[in-house]
Figure: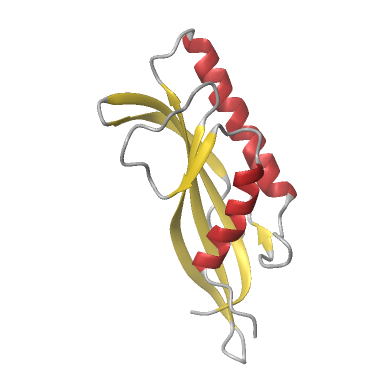
Length: 151
C-alpha cells in the first residue's frame, strides 16, 4: 500500500506552482510580512483539510485533500483595472494548469474540480491587509482525490 499524506499532496502541487509563469513568487504557508508582488501575483500554498472518503479491505483509504492557493497583488497599484484583470487571469490560468497536471505523476488520483468529494475547485476574491499594506487576493480552493492514503 502506498502512503500519500496531505503533506505529500502539498509537495506535489508545489512542483506545479514553482514552475508556473503566472506567479512572481510563492511560498508554502502564509506570509507574515507584505509579499513583494511586483507586476505578477505572489502565491501562498496552504493545507485546508483532509477527509477519509473510503476505507479499503487492506485498511488503505481514499481521501479528499483540499489545498488553498492564495494569490496576492498590491490593492493600491494603478490602474486598478489592471490589478483586477491580472488577478483574474492568473487565477484562471493556474486553475487550468492544476487541472491539466491532474495526477501529479500518479501520486494523486485526480484533481477533484467538479467536487465529487464534496468541494469544488473555485476562486473567491477579496482583500487582506498584511503589515499595513492592502492586497487584492484570490483564494483558489484546490480539491484532490487521493488513493491509498493513511488515515
